[in-house]
Image (cartoon, rainbow, N blue to C red):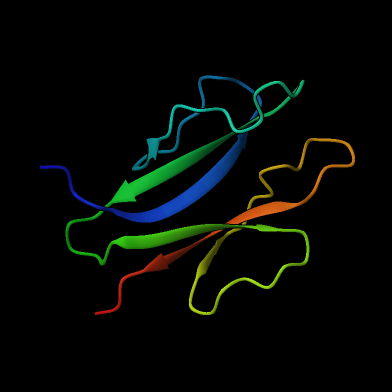
Length: 94
């Protein structure tokens, strides 16, 4: 059995071989097709922490839902004239 996802982050990478110690990389470049930097999501599974129960994408100045944690990397930061896109996730209450 696989432990649930408990944390989410993202990282901008200059090279494809980009990892973060203690995190699992989601093998999908979110900036595929954009010349330059790649953006990858990373997840952490902690059997002692509460799981992620929801993930939303917030565009530009939309108001994020209350009680969500921001992934502080603009997933669209390398496109010219593109919208700012941030992920927010919610952890289950104890």
